[in-house]
Picture (tube, rainbow, N blue to C red):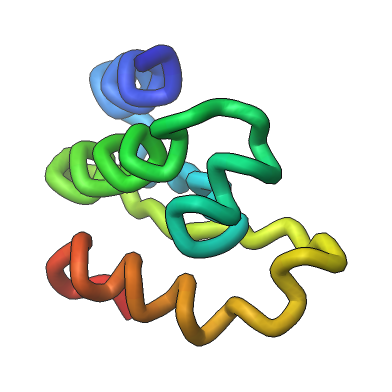
Length: 88
């Protein structure tokens, strides 16, 4: 995953803090439909977990608002919290 490679490169260059946002736009089926890629929710969560394991890298989630996901923020947060230890 390119984002992971770039984060590693930046920390290897001595940059003291790298911050990466991962887009998660709803619970799995909604996210995948909005992004147009089946399995994309799992890929996003996998990336988030890997980023959080890197020293010098902080990561978070960005949530693009669509009409289809306006009322799903709490549900999305619950899914992420269950899959990513320590996610707040």
